[in-house]
Length: 255
Length: 245
Image 1 (cartoon, helix red, strand yellow):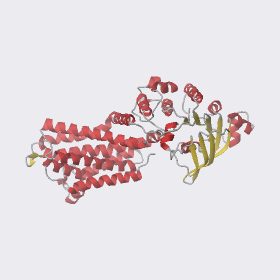
Image 2: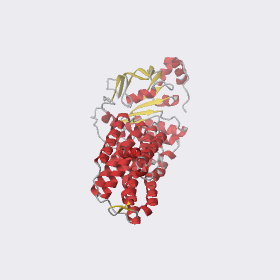
Image 3: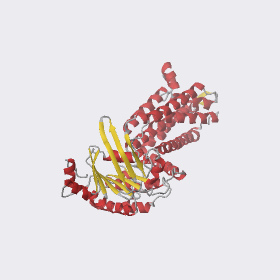
Image 4: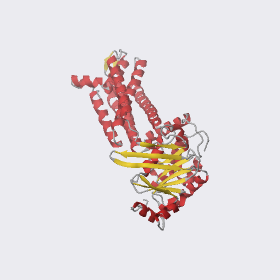
């Protein structure tokens, strides 16, 4: 009993195993893949035939300026705001996080692994949507590729941060899905998910553009056109990220 | 009592939830290699006590050491030598037995092999089955196997055989005896008399958050002037010990 006990943190192998396990959980939750991958694809396929012919800005079509930014934002928002919180709420509710807390793995590892898997999922959603848009409907890549990529990454952070608030406040897995869906559709509606922000009253549209969904759509659209991204949109996304992370850090419970 | 450093030393533990006192001045000294039972009715404070020992709950008062370490302060070290089976803990539902085994084994530097773990709990045939498709008893056995993955020196088992069929129960007892022979210190939370009588070196009898007695099973019977452990329990607590399950 006198041997020295050392602290040994789980190594790379444990992290990889956990990420693979989380990925399997996500893939096996087939219904959870419908909203992030298929719903945006459906909107793309339905709008692309007409939007692809509609030239709006400097030779770019409505598909590139409006539809693709919207579709890509939907992918991010549905994964970040609906799926990730529902997994975390389920893990907390069923005691999975507590069970991990009595092993050398910290429950925070699960959080990180979920984020990694969500990012991979978002990249798959991005690849599928872009492949369909480019190959089937002749869309062109963003004029300012670097800006588009940076905006996409920032929007991803903002959506996950909003999702962390949902995970922190939802008492049960079902309520996490409900709160996630409501948040998703509210942000989406204000951000122009239903018929574009032009169809909203000016005041509502102005608010929607300050929220993460609307800000992400507007900033991605600017990057696609090659215009300067409005700093106000970037600030909106940044503020959403900070508020989300801070709220989650304050309110998140492991059990 | 030996002069050796105790495997677990709990001193004057207190815990309340709101205005309900769950644990009221519990002190326990558990020796290395001992199989120690914690017996009591529901609400006696058994689970709260072991959760404080495991570092899952912070005591309102008192202190715990496990192999000389503070379970909350020295969390990283304690997790290397402690295996815990929680009373109500679910595992990733969509993962298979083999996948969960791989995951929990990956947390430890020198884990037991999957084959050995599955054999210990009799789940060799269920490798490819998802956790959510296992029966309650099989889920419990898997949870126990995972608690053994890191070759713990101290093992806490909350409700070891509740919900297991008689055959699985006997197999689990044999596993505990095997671990005892390896020198593992085992804390067994139970309300199954037969189990406590067969496995435990000493038993702490808890009632309403307090320790009524700490004795070998036969000592509890003698203390109460009773014929058997069931009667001793009734005599000492004035309560019927409800049947396991």
